[in-house]
Image (cartoon, rainbow, N blue to C red; front, side, top):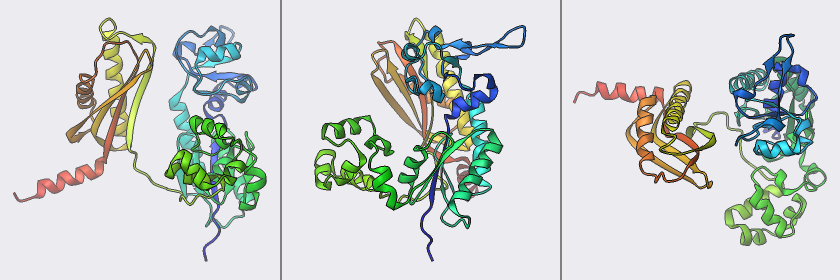
Length: 381
């Protein structure tokens, strides 16, 4: 007998900022913004106390990586320019990001969850889906046990939504943050989902939300009641049908426990726009470093790449991409650098550069490539 679907979405609360507070507990309860560079790290004073940088003193082009809930209450959210954020919260503490630490805490919380509920879909550094349908434990005590395991493994809190499908579970995990539990059934859709704005549905971005607003659709309930043919007329057949189904809480997507990555990339936004000739040594250094970091990512994850690409964003914010497919897959930094350099030659470099990125796609697991090489070597001709 098939049991009713129980899909959970676990979202760590203000993850990067919460990890930072593990290192700097004296900042708990304060507005803290993660971004900037290593130069914005705290200074240890002779008496052992620490002096922290303030957002008001930041000068540059960086963006907010994340912020504590206290900073969010002041209007500071991820993706905002740091200088723009300084106008809203000048006294907020500014910390540089520590991505190795975030990855470590990510591994910890996922391992803690997997020990209890192993049917997991990894959705990024701070969130996962779980299929709890076959788990024998009742939902509420199971979720409480999952949260306790995450807390014990990391010292951090998370919020969990449980629902009949991934779409509703994702919405649910955001309804009672931080440290919340939200259990949703289909019967709850009219009272708990329909009053929410359409942007609460994962997959409705700013442009689609603005268009819905123009059409007089201000809530998920209004969207659910809108005829499907009207949505198809305004959004096209694929998105129109999806919008109607999503607003009515319909989602059959399974929890996918394994997935091959499509690409691996690294990019950097410069503190100032770089001139191709005047800043050539700095551009070359950054370009090489990106290739080395991508190569390290490939090695760590066990992949080779056959298609190497670059991404450039100029000072006027125009972006261009180029890619090159190689005869055989590679994973070493020098080969990636050569291929990326060939891509670079195909871009007119007449403007200053704001962002530079390197991307590896057409990925092949190293083990599979090695097996193919062995079989080739064994052929008698």
